[in-house]
Length: 111
Length: 111
View 1 (tube, chains in turn green, purple):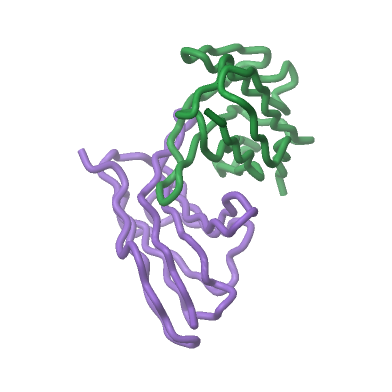
View 2 (cartoon, chains in turn red, blue; view 1 turned 30 degrees about the vertical axis):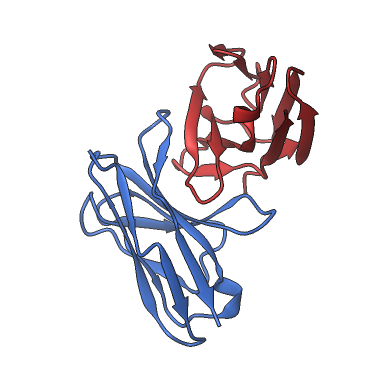
């Protein structure tokens, strides 16, 4: 079983601060994805990274895939209340096309 | 373009009843999956399919059956509902390394 551990599980910070969320595994993935989920909705894809060491930026969000393709991080600069939500990483690969989700990080941005 | 459509959105079952959660996609994606989401547990994979006629078990398959007779449809059957199956169920469709698209979810309560 491929396990993805996210840390921290909960994070509450003031508007304008920076934060980093981590996604770690002992398994190698062919791609890793980040999603944001709001209450009552399904997860929505933010980004997919496929190359070890890859860095992608989406406005104030920076995503990095580890060199060994076993871990990833999400960095948010100058957090805003609209960033509040559940952030999920998901790994794909191992030859079986399964998409395995991490344990999630619940982020709250305080105005 | 509807994406992924799940029905029903809400359902209450009595213990021992059976039912089918419907999932349909109009994106022609090869892979489809069913997840359940419980408080604090992230998304756990129930069953998945890599194409019509092909299904496989995920992390928590017991008590559930699936079939994939067409690319578009991937129904999830609860054989004999139990209170432990009270959860929010999500269906997703995806291709290799492109990210998954999720339905709105089905909130199931078993009493």
